[in-house]
Image 1 (spheres, rainbow, N blue to C red):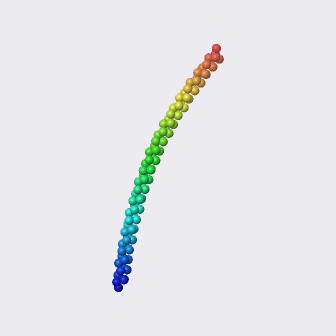
Image 2: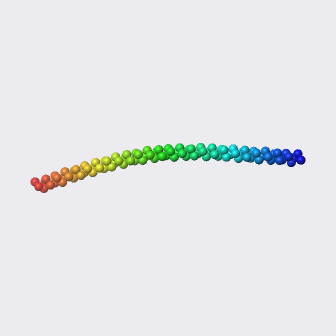
Image 3: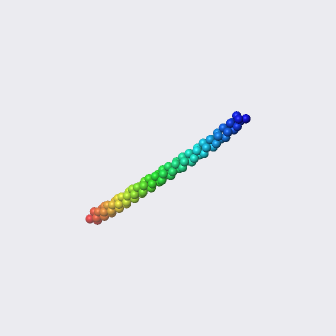
Length: 93
């Protein structure tokens, strides 16, 4: 009978150890998941910041290019008006 009791005691200890290992594993996995989720949030935040900087720089450059285009357009129109006026003057002379 002593052997049977020993087996039952040992089996109980093994089951307790299994439960403890399972709990430790779950705790480790939960911590790992939380750490990775935080890293993901950090990466997403950094990406968003960089994206906003890039968008702002793109907008600034686009606005500058549009302003340059508008200025060049106005200069060409002014030169065209001057040339047309000069041609009319030459023709009328």
